[in-house]
Image 1: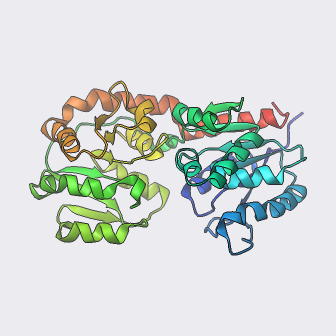
Image 2 (image 1 turned 60 degrees about the vertical axis):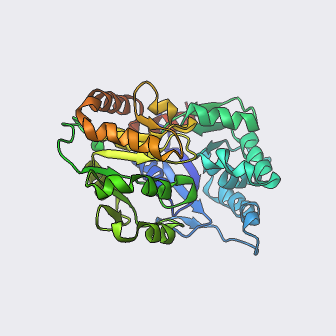
Image 3 (image 1 turned 90 degrees about the vertical axis):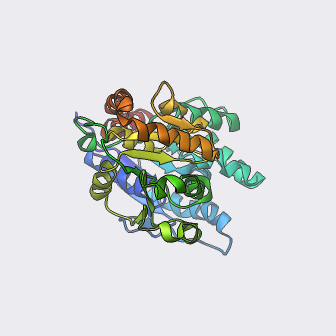
Length: 356
């Protein structure tokens, strides 16, 4: 007898691209999805109404609305994204209800948020305690989450790159200067873009590299001030774009660069590997599962000389990294195909719902 489609209540920020991406793929693979969100994103969703002037309490108060949604939508499973926010909301909503909860960790909800205050830490722990299964995009993130609460059921599933975007062949190494570098992380303190800019000024002025950053983020204005007359003279900015356009845009670059101070297993890094870019990253714990064994060119965090030395190696001989690029491409195809990894999530949810 054929099962009815798996009914999933997806609790997540409706403005976030990752929310739209996972909801679309879950539907493509036969699930019935209802997205509920406190934020007003453009994707179709049920808008949970924020209650009260204190933003920190919105997740707790919205749990009553979620409980009502559960009674009306009757999901087989709840899938909450970001432990300290929607994971906590779901934990409050399902008290004494026999609905399994999958909590997706996004990185900062475990690595940064619990350090903000005792309340933030307790909310995160509450979310982890209530979860029937915890999903993380790296083993490192799963280990750090278990330091907060030692849950039993957890799985590492990277976000990954869609199958039709994974290049058939990474192609030849760049053969001429300036090297085209993309930094696809928004302007915020954690992503350290101003450090990158101050470190590579001389390489830009010498026309050895052209470097592109996003035209968005909380620290954009101060970044523009720092860039000054380098904007459009070796430093450029790109605006928000659709998925297909963005992937095609990134594929046109030679090098992916990130100096992030905190990461779990960045989706942008894995995407760049699948597209055949040379990856240059700050050596932090959150990237080592993909950067180790020669997967990336690494530099010491917040060390301008180390970053410039790493880039100089690529500038002098990009072809020496061809083997690295081909190995990364193969690894993404086998471990980080987005559709396959969503299928794994569906299998976990089916098992939790007693449909395995």
